Image (tube, rainbow, N blue to C red; front, top):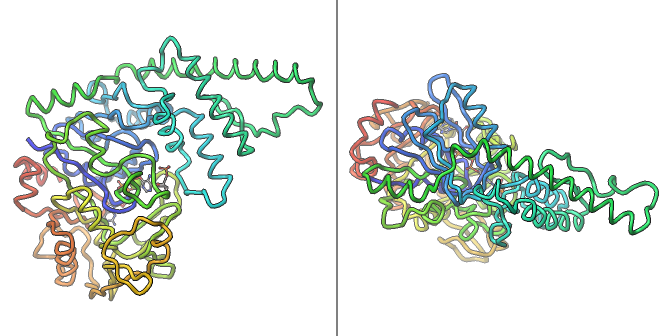
Length: 476
Ligand code: GDP
Ligand code: IMO
Ligand code: MG
């Protein structure tokens, strides 16, 4: 049985949630391996519509087991809110949603630091989702982070004191809020300063008392979270490897996209985890020798949210058209997404880094009305043509796109399920992508809903779905 990684080939929001949900009938479980509630994965079928942030998209299929791996950073309040939303939709999760007890906990301290850094602005602004993702991974890498198994640990207060102290120091240096514990509304450093100056000894006693009460409140909150999380906590690496040994297949659901990867992305305008395929192993404890392939999700054009270089970006009416037609507004933050043409420098890089076996091409329908569809195939920089992504962000910022222009098809592709019904010009566009990537496009998505997806009966897709393509088609 095949274990397969789904990975975004651009800057996120490629439609990973839709593809994961669609392919579920070929797998027994879905696993998230990195990121946190910065992700927003939309799943639509028939008249139903869900946006998942932390919990794997497979949860909407009642027969699927879902796992949240050790590589994730989990905000318990966001997780519990999502559980409540799912319950309100009638989705039962008991006994099939398992959270790694080694995953790190994202606390309100982390979000406060993220917000303060972004608010401080200047050249360091990344345009994050302000959820605390970077600071949570920093705590992990600095080895003072809290893991889900620590939420009711005997030394919880001590550990929270360290976290609070570090956050407070940074917040103070940024001139921002100093109170950021669970449940406590953040107030600004200046508004906390008493109107009448206290004697130093009194001030220090007040600060100490406030610290103690904040930590006590936060510890209480953590213990309450631990109660609700406990039924889901498992040694997921044991569970996942036992599943594989028992012949069950897993679908690994990537969040963000290749160009947002902390190592390989457009640094520093990236997220703080490994969103490329390698992250699926470190983020779950499933070894590389148990992985059978990767499906790259590629949007037929490009979008990005937040700051950072974007060589094929459109600053004109065509970009606005893509945004409106593609409904390119952030699932998590509602921010308008920046839009541009497909960039095959980016896509080839993603193919290379993830070892993409086959491509799911999404949102082809959004291009339906264009008479001409340019594709960025290289970058022009200082009189040279680059076919590979340069590491230096300043080079990328100056790079001019080298465009190859394709003829538009100017008719609706929405909901096409048969390859023979695709307009010839759309077929040419897809053929070109296949040539550039050296990988077959075996899924073509032409609408947001599960049922609006064309699947090709191709040997690679047959292999990656363990011969269960028939079930995927039946339940599409
Ligand atoms: P993800 O983060 O990669 O899961 O992607 P998002 O869910 O954030 O963004 C993709 C958006 O495009 C969602 O609103 C989807 O419902 C929508 N979508 C996905 N595939 C298609 C498609 O083929 N056509 C259209 N028009 N919309 C799509
Ligand atoms: P999905 O899984 C698009 C972007 C943010 C910002 C950068 C860093 O839905 O594709 P962070 O909050 O992670 O520290 O922000 O990464 N970003 C995303 N962009 N889709 C996402 O997730 C993203 N998750 C983070 O906009 O530029
Ligand atoms: Mg998204």
